[in-house]
Image (cartoon, rainbow, N blue to C red; front, side, top):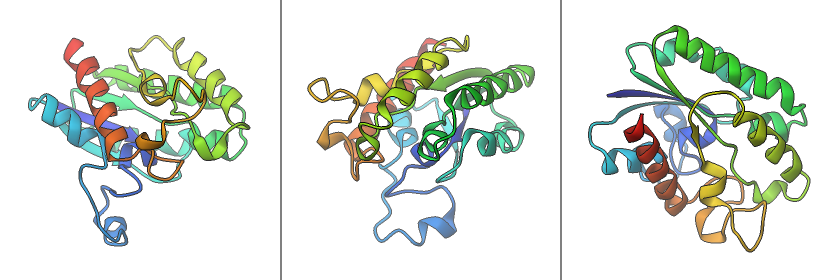
Length: 191
């Protein structure tokens, strides 16, 4: 099953991976294990991912790439929103952009899932409230949700990832991506 993974740096696999060979060439030691797609495929070898993640993109920018990314796929993962929050955009337009991507994926005949926004250690505490607001809106979009926030949130430090699950306070570590890959495999297998 071809899965079009559309999103920002979390989908791309930052900081140790990027699907664009030119961007990956700038990474000192690229590691394909630094992407949830790698781990999801290990859990379920029937999954074949097309990684369409681009570092730094907001939801409006991600939406522009949907049709190209989704060509020939059977499933679409929509992920994004943290860059909208980081750039201090309101969360409601980000949620509407995610809704539009879900609707477009369904129009194309795809099964569509949407990912929660991760906790953001370097943006805490300022970003915690907008992240929770956007995640609440994501759960109202009507598509199956990948519980990324819940998977990586430190129960003892709410609003932040556990230290071993983040490489830089912005992105997951390899271990964090492994956990997200398990989430993705579980949700996609249940579709």
